[in-house]
Length: 321
Image 1 (tube, rainbow, N blue to C red):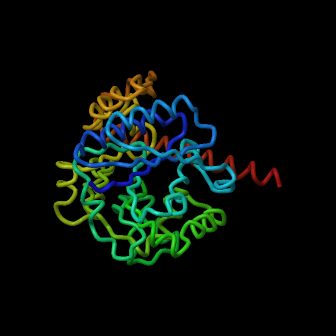
Image 2 (image 1 turned 135 degrees about the vertical axis):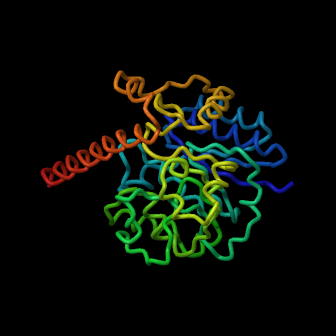
């Protein structure tokens, strides 16, 4: 049986979510042999490492742990709710010198079908295979702002089939680091990956990264071919709870159709207890509202908060010079 290499990254706060994703991977692909590559900070707790290893081995898999030194990610931009672990995947070409292809999965994903085709589909010299990102109207020009040509589609980085052989040959990791350290980026890791890898990207059917936006945003039907959004939502292979915290299945406001599936997988991990976030009085008032209305209210607040944080950071940076 051919070993399939799957990578993921998490710090202490996200290890339970990552374990739920891995549980879904093994249960949805019982006839596959997986080698998990877990990328983590140097300070990752040894007890949790042992628990995760026992969990993976009990499901018939192998796991390797890869601590990423802080110096390797020094100077790379991060986001308030997303730590430096977002960058760990870019080091996979050098960490796995004898592996040609790896499937990278964000911790906020679930595998709900056979993913064999992602390991056998041709890459034809591409650096990456990924699903196009559905952008809200205010970010519709994101690719142009990054200087990408009109022919290049901006992809989502939560599910990536990485051609490590091609990335090593062209020193893509070095190029990503250099670019990210020199630019101001809105979605730091995703922007940098698109700039460096996007010209050689194979676009996948959205069922391989069925994002929240496919269920919620009308713009999704402008991004994909006729019928693909309906196909992805009806029969996803990988579900991705992308977006701000209130979109996650561990948030009080989540009404995602796969929320209960996440909770079931989470209960089967060494971290079964889920701390439900956002159980506030205001959210109790919002939860009965239709999903689109609730989303509109929350998005406006989320973007306003982010704009305030960016302005505050800019003022702080200027005053420290």
